[in-house]
Length: 178
Image 1 (cartoon, rainbow, N blue to C red):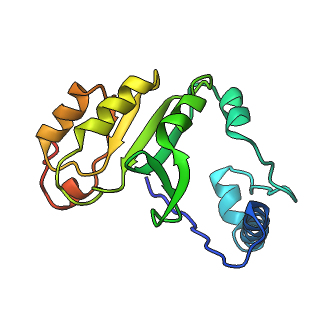
Image 2 (cartoon, helix red, strand yellow):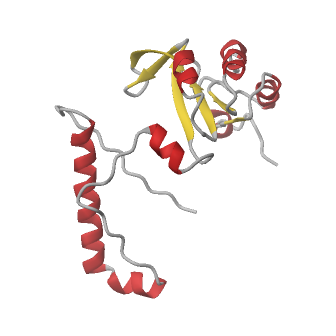
């Protein structure tokens, strides 16, 4: 399975719609190009060439969750009790636990929590926010940030986490997979 993504960063935009409009035009250009250059390959694979609408629909989280109950995981990055944004560089002013409380009525699959204060450090998980977060929500919580070895995986589960995300611990060979 190969995954390719596109990360767009812009300056001097009026808002999210500017970014979404650019991405819409970019996808339209990509698939128009593919239709002209790769039509035979699409035909051989038996798949239609995707059509990108003039305006890609926008959905709120509540609308998306209602349309796909139990299928969405909300990712939240926090330093302390504050949600961070802009590549973890800026505080949002939004309290993590108020945000989680606001998710309570949505039919979500889970919550992915990254403790950015220790992400990538191999210092071990910070148990206090994991315990507090797991107690604050009925959603399954996936924990990311600081995991150093198998003992942290066990600790996360003992604190109530439904799962963990391993990154640096795998890259640094601190955890071996079977």
